[in-house]
Length: 125
Length: 111
Picture (tube, rainbow over the protein chains, first blue to last red):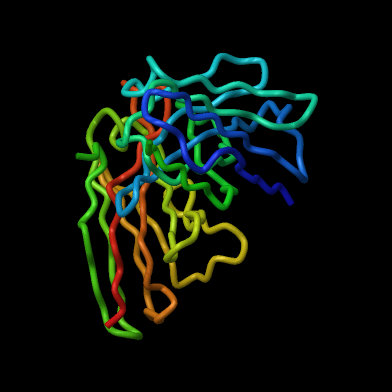
């Protein structure tokens, strides 16, 4: 079955760029019915959707983060990545990658399964 | 403040039935977007519990059920067990957002 694993630095300095990678095993990111997404959760708080990327399509981002975020994919390595620029303490969170499953029924219906185990990234000097 | 509104907490005794609501609007749940539910046990990643309003992935007990009506959805858990103690999140989409949105989450306490 498909498994996802986040990796990257656990600490990033304020104003610098957060970079994470999600390695996918057990399935290919080249899929017409699946997108690949990032979701974060600040300590003690709820889930926040960051964005998604689809093979052959343009990434889509949360409007609140759009000016600072980039999601890209490397099909040769079967992974996708997150870059978040100019980070502040408010960006401290557990970052999850997840597979987005899609279905069209008038509108695009999407849900997330499976999820990676998550990676805590702290913004601190 | 989340666009999808959930109660911060619910509780119930073992064996009882509880429901968790997810209230949206005409631009998300009411626009025809399905609602999905996730269970997050302490210290773990969220796990898909219900998709497409009422469908259970393989392995999810039938004690968990979902429904949707109008601009709201509900997750019901019957025969409460201690291991159900977790945070529960609803998720949907919105016509004004080319992406997903999550409810604020509900903490279930089993008394």
